[in-house]
Figure 1 (spheres, rainbow, N blue to C red):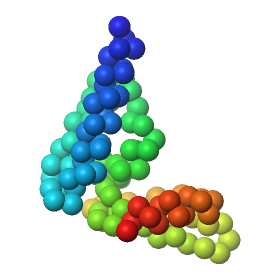
Figure 2 (cartoon, helix red, strand yellow):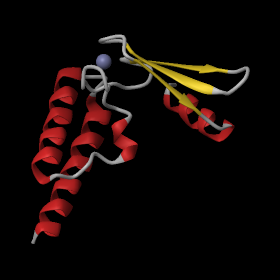
Figure 3 (cartoon, rainbow, N blue to C red):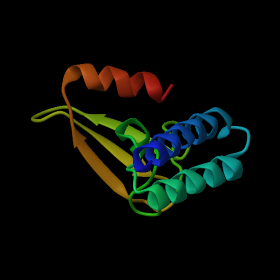
Length: 111
Ligand SMILES: [Zn+2]
């Protein structure tokens, strides 16, 4: 029973995030609402936001952020390669060390 609730919650979270990603360019407020809803469902059902979606939430302001829109992505080379994510809403910066493969993945996202 409990597992069932978690499964349904997870499905809803995925749907909400997919929708938010789809519509954020046209309607960023709606995208924000979807993400808030997804987070609330996650908290209620005690499921964690899947890793692939967690990068769309700013850890500073908890808002929906997206590469090329509300998120600035910089790839720094020299020494250890890392990506700098800057939330354009609150200025929160996250640095993620990466391998080359991931750089290309993120670079394609920000187009
Ligand atoms: Zn932020």
